[in-house]
Image 1: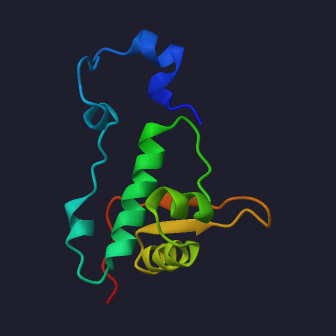
Image 2: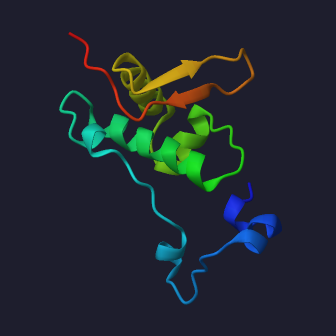
Amino acid sequence: MEKLAQTRAFENKQNIVLEGFDPISAGGFTQVPNVLLNDPKLTFPAKVVYAKLLSYAWHNNLVYPGEATMARDLGTSQSTISRALGELEGDGWLDIIRLGQGWTNRYVLHHTVTPKY
């Protein structure tokens, strides 16, 4: 899948160019809300999965990451991804819209969460 930043239309409008950066820096960064990172109820895998979903959203024009793709990209199992997504959904960090069998889910990420009492 081609990254948005690598498309000709984007390059023509780009006002900041990374020249001479090492491959790691040139690959970009993903900002994760500190409130999520500091949430003691969330497990480490859930925090990493949220960060990966943000990365997909910011670095691609249109993506459909399934659990298998996320597992491969993060070097873990699909069951770990599934548990992390359920945890994030349960705590209100995202909504999962199931589109049907054979389709990848749609993920709606929330920047902030209202605490549940």
